View 1 (cartoon, one colour):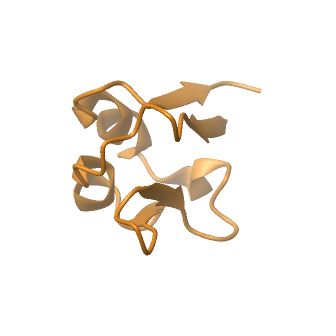
View 2 (tube, rainbow, N blue to C red; view 1 turned 90 degrees about the horizontal axis):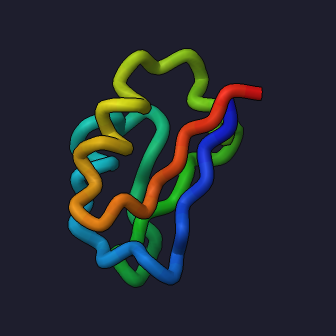
Length: 64
């Protein structure tokens, strides 16, 4: 699994970090970021739900 965040689209709503806090966080400016070492989702079953929860669809989850 590969997770990408469109930083130009992200509005910092924080839904990803609330839904899958073991994978997503917010940077110092409040925008979505992946936790170090979690670029592949770390097996968290909530990653796809976090992507769906994004109000501007800034998160893409793709299978490798």
